[in-house]
Image (cartoon, rainbow, N blue to C red):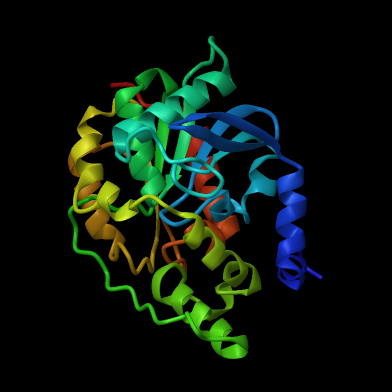
Length: 287
């Protein structure tokens, strides 16, 4: 079987095995802790997930990226296994992220590369603005909060359904929001969908809409680049998103992943990783 076929044969076992390989680190977050999982060695790369997600948004990329990087993958405050932040806003989230990264990287830690998906990109932009000592480069993946027209997710009812009917509804919701090709809404994606959504206790929409990203970007001093799914239903027409971003970051590297929906790194992992690694390998631009 191919690696993807093996993942889909037993999603729970695959996720448990992958998580067991990680170093689990807990840092202060509100009245509890923020949970980080770390794989690999090399230059650090911080990854953050989207709304109603967890570290598993990056499940298709961890093995490959960790061969060359020290991946520091967060459960954002109020998501996954992490506690709610001290305050349910960007200030509270940035505080928890900064405290955690300072602890993980050490007192002499250098600025690191940050890559955030959807809500995670908005969160990392606020972190970079408030804690510039941590940010070497920021890569935004399918980020909202640009004040551009949003798509219209097609979501149906799941509660009360069972068996094949329930599976079909979950698959339809993935295709109505996160993915484009039916084959991408596979057993692993379906297995992960509801547990991560149910674990989310923070209102992601209020942290993104309508223009939380574009309002903070002028304060970000590190290099900013972006990756977009060509068929992103949530934030459609990459050219529109690029134009808004370039108005603030005119020299950014903006890359589009053909055939990918919103969750581009899951749907087209090889193409996404090639784009990300090209961006990360490019020397920083000077002002």
